[in-house]
Amino acid sequence: MFETAIRYEEKCNCRHRYSIAKMNRKLYNEKSNGIFFNNIYAINKIYAKKGLFQSMNTAAFIQFLLERFKIEHSKRDRSGVYGFTQRLMAYNSNKIEGSTLTEEQTASLFDTGVLPKSEDYYRAKDVEEMNGHFLMFNKMLDTLDLELTEELIKAFHYELKSGIFEDRANGYAIGDYKKRPNMIGIYETVLPSQVSDEMSQLLAWYNNQDIFLEILAEFYARYESIHPFQDGNGRTGRMILFRECLYHGIAPFIIEDANRPEYLDGLKSYRQGKDVTALTSLFQKEQEYHWNRCQYFLAE
Image 1 (cartoon, rainbow, N blue to C red):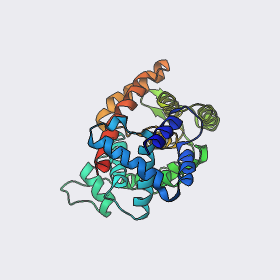
Image 2: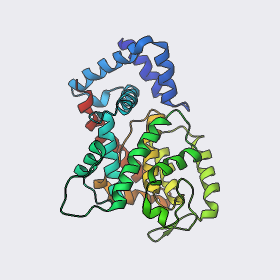
Image 3: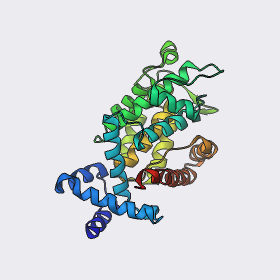
């Protein structure tokens, strides 16, 4: 059993251009009834109980997440790692963009569909975007077997923004590239007429790389500089990061609102000097945090 796990680790650690999802399916089919991955989980539980979580087989951790996401989502089980990830990502990603909903309110909205009684008013757009984020996460899970394309990115944006009354009233393109120029603070972004070409070039470059954190950081920084949508660029981009980690066998991460200053500084470093060192460092920090938070679901 342990020898099999070691061979699997060595095979997954090599840099390759095939997704971990494809490799996992191939190995799963070779081992009937899921026995192989049950053994991997047993090994990982030993690691976790001994406090050796960082030694855990990353590929098996990802397979655990993929299987639990699928099972819990299909059963509408919001008590496990699927619900935890949905709530954590939706809260932080929307908070970075100015959402006024708290973690408790986000959890209530996801778990029960209602918001707790409050003396303050709830902003309709915050509620709509939180629900849109939940839908975008589900769309991400449903399409994990596909290579990243412009059409898939637009589909993520559609799930996030299709229910936002304010965006529709303002005439924003939903699930399509922007029609009006938009700026990030004092920085100009790519003009609408150039977005399609720029996104095509970005994805052509990206899909020809061996994917690791530095490449993800550069992809995301370039994506943000293009700013392809009228609104919702950061949230779709951060969903892509989480998704591409799962797809390429990299421990996933969620950027926390608490680290927003580091996040913005990382993007600024790329805009000013094409340097992704700070952004990559943040990704590594968030990787470790998310990895440790997930220990709870692997403890027994």
